[in-house]
Image 1: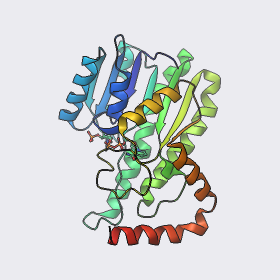
Image 2: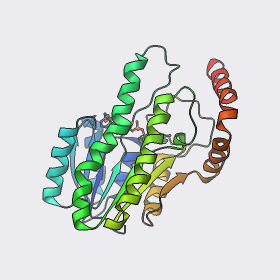
Image 3: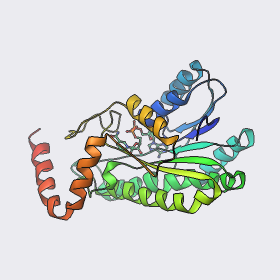
Image 4: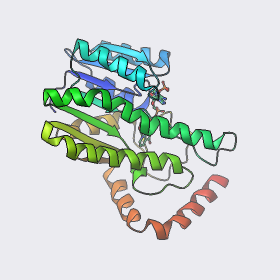
Amino acid sequence: MKNPRTILITGASSGIGEALAVHYSKEAVLLALTGRNLERLRNVAKQCEEHGAEVIYEVLDVKNSNAMHNFISKIEEIHPIDMLFANAGVSYSTTDTYIDKPSKDIEIVMVNLCGVIHTINPVIEKMKIRGRGQIGIMSSLAAYIPTPNYPAYGATKAAVKSFGLALRAENAPHGIGVSVICPGYVHSLMTKNLNKPFKIIDAKTAAEIIKRKIIKNPSIIAFPFSVYICVIFVACFSRLFLAKINSAINNQERDP
Ligand SMILES: NC(=O)c1ccc[n+]([C@@H]2O[C@H](COP(=O)([O-])OP(=O)(O)OC[C@H]3O[C@@H](n4cnc5c(N)ncnc54)[C@H](OP(=O)(O)O)[C@@H]3O)[C@@H](O)[C@H]2O)c1
């Protein structure tokens, strides 16, 4: 979609969501931004307003379907949502010893999978009636390969990829575009303490790539291209490689 006027972005208080918000900011654009950290969200809203955009922001947990529904209905009353990025997400490593793993796994599913559904469901029926709209779902290259140390994260990213591709096929006849976004490593709060075995790009570059590509409504927006190709190759043989990848990662984490 070219020149979306009203854009909803979840997880806009930092990282890729923040960069997308700033990147889409200009005169005559209304941005609806959510996150949980008010101070960071306010700071992002200020940057967007400096670029000429009108901004409505609210502290919201994507796990809360009623709150998401109410916020989205409020935006729809002001202006129909043209484009949305279901971007909010969390991650953790099972090698972190201080956390309650079972409850953290549930939290990841609630945010990364249910949160995406809570964001899209209130909008999609309205987009169908209008016969237009563009949806970007934030998955990951981790969707392609079972990821040792991040089993719940990888599972949710594979789930939203499948959800998005099915939604795309179902809604194309209604004039709605759906793109599943699969970045490799991007600098953000999520990745700041990780050992990154692959090329890493900044959030601004990630937002530029997403904005440039989503105009053409591709099914998948995967980047960096070189890493994507490696991932596709490894994915073909993942059952053979997985034990080796796991021991390589564990050795690296023991001896950084
Ligand atoms: N960075 C990477 O390498 C990478 C690679 C592939 C995919 N991704 C995906 O890209 C998306 C953005 O991540 P990022 O790298 O930009 O990390 P980030 O800087 O940590 O941003 C995550 C965003 O999600 C929000 N969020 C987390 N839990 C939430 C909840 N329960 N309700 C509402 N908002 C919530 C955070 O808001 P608050 O902090 O205000 O709570 C923050 O704005 C995620 O879906 C992530 O899985 C990232």
